[in-house]
Length: 216
Ligand code: ADP
Ligand code: ZN
Image (cartoon, rainbow, N blue to C red; front, side, top):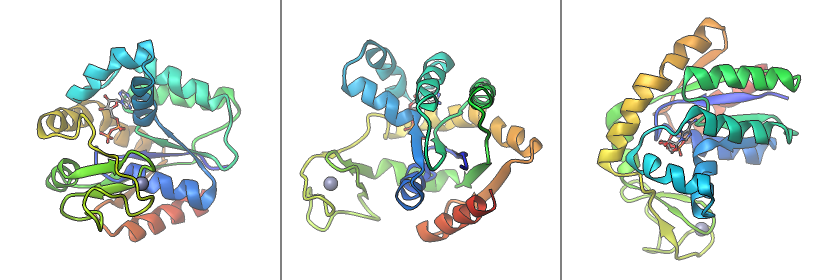
């Protein structure tokens, strides 16, 4: 089964594409961002420790996220794994390679989603989600039909992420260029990188990703 990494700056659309692959191909999405936010919501010791770091837009330590991924990998995935928001550093990339090898698996492809910074700022600062079902909305580009009510599930619990503001976003972008973008070169050199235009229509991006998966 194919295991893939979705790589790209915050707001590139990794989560949106990952959710489609979960629905269409029964793949398993491993989002370290989601896992860390869950740890925070459920009030675990680790969740409390990382919550300020995340709100500022900085990366949490490699040890923590590698630990989270190791636990999930040991559970296995029928349709293959989608790594979303992991790895974010070269150390995490090496750890992932080793973890997969130990369980007799490998990485099929790394898909880089390219989006320019101006688009990212616009996408992220207007973003909110339904706290009940996870549907994603945007103040300008995708407001719910009825203000404050989720189109998908009728819920009234709209949420904005603590790090979806301009100052945290600046830090998140800086962290991306400093620590994560070197992974583009790393996977390119290994012959595993495919780049797609993350500014294209959602369906177009999805079909580019599908093509990569069909070859994997
Ligand atoms: P984004 O939408 O910015 O891509 P995520 O939801 O993937 O954000 O992650 C949110 C925050 O969680 C990050 O800014 C960081 O603090 C933390 N985080 C998530 N994944 C990792 C990781 N692999 N390594 C370090 N920190 C991480
Ligand atoms: Zn909803």
